[in-house]
Length: 355
Image (cartoon, rainbow, N blue to C red; front, side, top):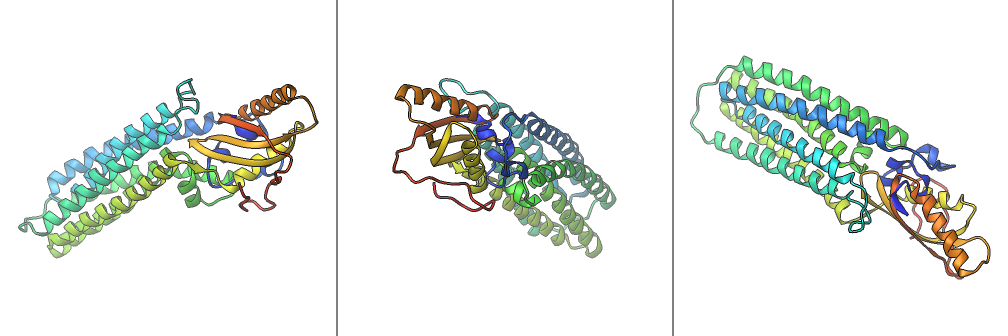
């Protein structure tokens, strides 16, 4: 079947290797629209871009006025995040292109390629720059501190703006997580939408980084030791590096091919068995090929004992029903051999079945 709405699964549930919406545990509706999720992700990225751009400009000015190493690290972080949002916009747009003869599975995996670029940018422009500058400041000659008040004001405003962006990404993630019966962090790490994961992770790191920078600035002011400020810059860099590595790892896993969660596989089996044409399912593989997009490959036994040509027509009809789902980019079903063992959906969500 096509990767659009395989087996009638809701788009996020089918595509995500994480969890299954409660509604899909019994009857699974076929025509559901994934446009709402795409629109929500677009809004999340747009808010993050505007917030990060304003913050990056403000932090850069504050870094010049205060001479704070932590503020320099924060400025580098915000500029990296701003550039990353551009990559995420490109990821969203290019991954939504429909399949074509040269690319029958569509372009969904482009989302992970551009999101991987964004994560690498965060690692280099954010993490590496912050750590390098912090180490340099540790061994630099001690200088007079700048206007600390400006630094505190910029950090406070940045916290509010970053918090606004974070609340939007958290709201989207929480809504999707609730529909799939999993907690917030599990959903963020497991979702097939790399833009949501990137914005949530970057905003979370930004809020923690602002607190670290504020502490470094305060300790510098109180003690007169610039080392505290430099250490703050290093800690911000380490934080960004760790977040970037997590994002790089998740995008890599989706790029090399990741099978959907066993709960999703079970729901697909149930959807197939619910079709009057299907008697048995003996083999099934559901693989994520993009944000809220999957391919389905399997073997089924068609009800009745008809001629080969008639069975082929009925098999194509089953594939068409699967491809009626916006989450299914492609579906390929073959006939089961008489001696092949049937597979059944798991009794408990999350229990694995052999492929």
